[in-house]
Image 1 (cartoon, rainbow, N blue to C red):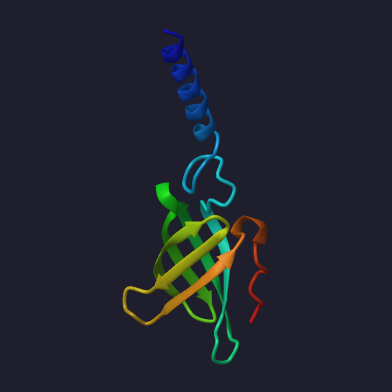
Image 2: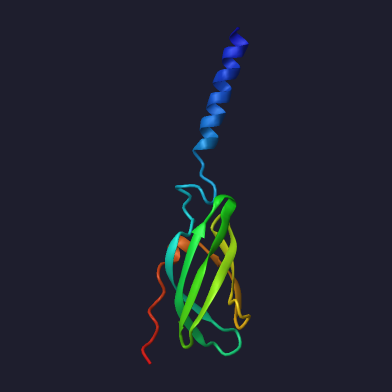
Length: 121
């Protein structure tokens, strides 16, 4: 009888310990990205800055989806998908017409804060 009681206590402690560590997509996970963010992309070829907004949602397992709306220096709407692993966010952004495709990896997205507003033109 004592072995069964000890096994039940050990199981309860292990279950409680596992429940205390949120994973990507779980409430309380420090690096989840949920909501609208200011976006700034810099092109590799000539350093042009492209500004807009990006709306993201983190699902179970760190799957990230969302929408993007670039507004300066041109207007393009697109879809976003990616993966959140620990403090690293990898995203691919593309427009339905194929006119634009961006990809990249960011570290510690929750500490990056909003990027500056686009310059007035």
